Image 1 (cartoon, each protein chain N blue to C red):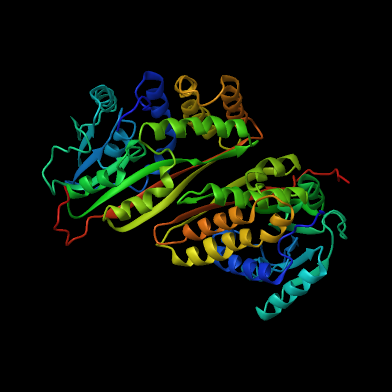
Image 2 (image 1 turned 30 degrees about the horizontal axis):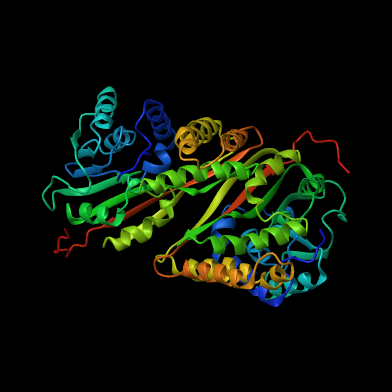
Length: 276
Length: 276
């Protein structure tokens, strides 16, 4: 992963990711719980936005959370301590140079990581090789192409496109959610099952209007303003018009839609070959 | 409703709508059942694609299904007879000139109708006035802006846009699904609750690959070819490229997503004023 734009690396973005985690916990995590005694690798934990939930849902599993960024890990450690969670170990590591022996883990959990990687299939293959036969990989990713809203606004779509282009320039794919099934299958995982987790927001769901439409999605797009203008992807007035339109969709008659994709696949019981 | 383009009025389109109904029955209808003895108006039944399911889920309700088109009603009658359904009466009527007294029905059911209307709020107001106080209106609509797929294709989006533009030129809105909440609220319905019903299709769901991606959505877009070219909305080669890309999304590593919106709202118990 290289390039100037990576979200999640400044204080405002961290607050946003924590808000997002609080609102979306049930939608994304309710069906992930690992058995007592199992060893779980969380790859790309970032600032720990998902780590606390992951650990709390599997209190008797041993979780190892890795990230490439030491500063993110420091945030994550602090968050986990504040939550009183004790079953997580943190370690600095690159997902493409994993410091673990093959067949070290029972399960792997990956959330909002593949979207940043130039070689997501390679990453999944490396992670697969760390699994004991029959172990699972769970992948959760969003998809910016799944964002639509009322009132509709071409300016808002243009502003969103800036983040898609910035992320692509950094080697990632902000529209990766729809690709979870083919990516996991291509990585040789077996029995892959993907489910779409759609967030539908109207005025009857005020916690999502505030926690998701405003503080997660719109805040994320707003957060790309400086980079988008520096890269000359859009005129400042057009960007601001787009952000205003996203805020408009959070008003009483507004509607906002976004979808996350969650996939689970297994390392085959007969898997012998280890890719490198 | 006026204009040249209205889908559902030729034999191929009718087959498509029946396929769609078969595949999507559970997703759209599982939570709609009316009590014994209740009177239900189905407004805009078309060729009866939803009528059989509606009647079978509420076998002891009395259903009155109306449509503006006599030829569609003939199809619907035939479909209902073949299914052995006996609790449906058909009647030719315009939703804007309804031949019923106020407070005639306990419930109203509207599926894939508002997308074709220039004044959807007025239609809902007229239908609301036919309800006894406390009665409900159920609205189901799709949203073409919710369609995305892997592999992604600008040509496919261009082909889809043709139908959106044709439907807009005829006074409708193919992206109306996201507007179900504001439309129902604006029509004075109370306690409106909307849920998104997303269809996620990958190779693990072959009945949806065939029944939805190919035979419902792609067939519908293909069906607009003649009108789209006649209206000079797109070059023939570009349209065909777009349709080919939609078929590509139905292959083994393809993914297709689409979302329907279902809203339920009530006529207030204290509703006295009847709008006209």
